[in-house]
View 1 (tube, rainbow, N blue to C red):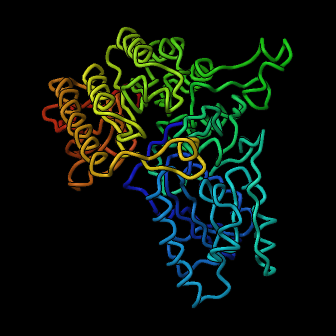
View 2: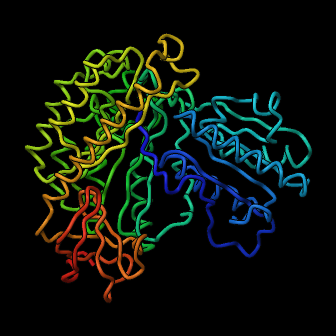
View 3: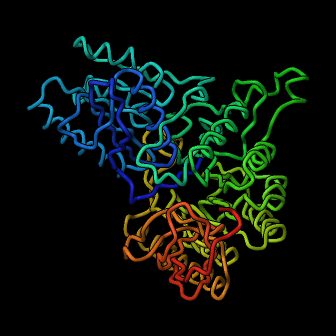
Length: 481
């Protein structure tokens, strides 16, 4: 499972319009990947039915929740510091309750309650529907915990509220859990086995978003390409399904087509893909539908076959190249991004050079690059010695980042002089006189505001670029408005 972590939104307090009948205040912060932010929307929806409105002021809260990530040690350290802050506020407001949600809750379980005594409630990713009961427990003065992982929970029947939304783009969860036991990853242990959501509920959510004015959705899962709906249940139990269930099953390519047909003027993205599970029919479906964006996040983690095997990545370097070649053949304008780990246990200089040579072959548009961080509970932590010196990890990571910046500039320069459709998401971070949006390839595009508005599809001529941003001028609306 891969995680794309947007550092700019880490720890943001999520808020939505209040319900006039609600009397209690919920403060919720989220850390980690897009899945955690999507889960926070589900939690806020469940608790709005229990009398809670969200607030962005910590001191006003009756209930403080932090939705956590365990993917890297840094994420857990950040959460612990926030819990110290929450408890300092709690001393002046004794009725305030504090809870930990998500992956860190699942990993540490009741240790957070018993040993560290820093929270009142611990709730795993599959237990959010139990929040009303858990809150009643803590209201009555008892600690509460539910970290049971489910075989069938997908929250497909919970309509998420859209927290801190720009009203233009939204995430729609299609799977939960992961069956790919990568040795460096905690997700199978914190989010459970893989199960898919009913495709009709996914299409209904997309249709509802369109009616509410949203222009783009990202279908979200730990590993979207292994989506498989056959009436419910774990993916690994598909072989036990009846013949009729197997005959009517829906895979990811079919789901992608259903969504594209349902709203032909809505942009469709998806994340994240796993090289071992991505099939040609997904790429062909993308090529067939102009509203499916030409962008694939395709993490590889290493360019060395030896390290890929140690990571339990069920593909080789050569198989990855074959997939890249097929994408380039079927979708010549497709942008591809990566996740890369520097300094995995036993990684040699030759292994590192294999990673750099793989990057030279692909020339990714952008990437998410990290030094290896041992996570407790993973197979790598149990079986492999974290034997690469910190300075070596940092140096290799720096070389990977430098090469990615070079390739990023190579890719953005290919857009110069072209006219591209951009969906306006909001003001530019650097200039209030400019809009920021993204093209089909997910590259940020900045251009003067003029009379255009958030949510407009605009044709933009690309005149300049950096390694990560395109700069241009609008020349008119597209046919999608």
